[in-house]
Length: 380
Image 1 (cartoon, rainbow, N blue to C red):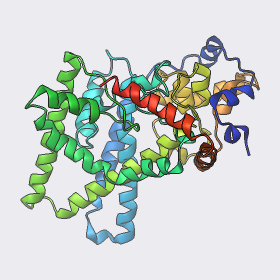
Image 2 (image 1 turned 180 degrees about the horizontal axis):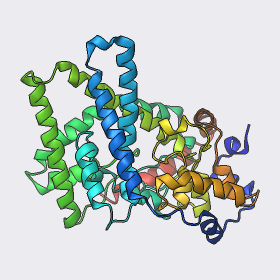
Image 3 (image 1 turned 90 degrees about the vertical axis):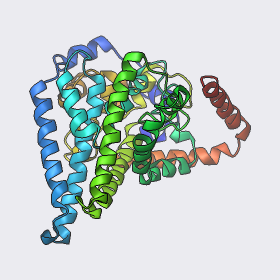
């Protein structure tokens, strides 16, 4: 068992390193890897999208045969997944740049895939040092300290998320036009890409609300146009089944990636920056299949938490430099995991062990849970 697998808290992981890390040294090692390459962004997105939609459309061609169509379906899911995950880059790109790229991404991916960029604005809270792992972070759950059923529930909800997205933008969007209280509820409870069901999204500024409304209208029109085309026979009913199946597959892959992105050792309290770093995971750059389940640089999640502004195309080189030059006992080195499956097994084991130990400390667990719940309710 590795030290990463055996650790129960981020502090335990740090105890097995020097506990020292110099941001200045790391930045010097990384060097000139912070500049995003616009040409690469555009080429990657457009080629990915064109091939994805071509494969998606060819799935309907019965003359190709079952095995070929199944292969095209799998490829279209992986490419749609990759194109959709550019939403992560949009959050971290400079706000005054790449405006055309943001608009085109929303038109090609955000609106048709029902993940307009505004649903991911809250991702910034995941990177705030005082918010990471707390109730202010909608992208964190202490999975290593909870029952395995939390992991199962999180993964299986992928079956209904596409339906919830359709309901959110096809039904709730027009309802938000009726009364401010409905708008507030929908924004706080049903407008974020998160994993914590208790997370309450902060209310938007007027400028952000205008962006949200335009993107919501786009999703609303797309849903009902698609429905009309199917109803009037312009699209086959199979297109509806294919769209839903694609959504389920894409959301499932992303859920697995999310579970493997952290070690989830936090318990709801504020963590130090180094604890946040070792609680996040990198995967070996040389494994080509990591690009399939964690594309657009997301296989370097710990490095991303270290330097969120490094563009996805520079993460592999930045990681290589850090692993080559940082001290042998650097905390950064324990962020690397041998494989996706190794990390998933480690989390499953931790959750099982946590369940067994919690039987002896039910009062403490309930008190901590009640405390976090009261903090959330106080923000409503």
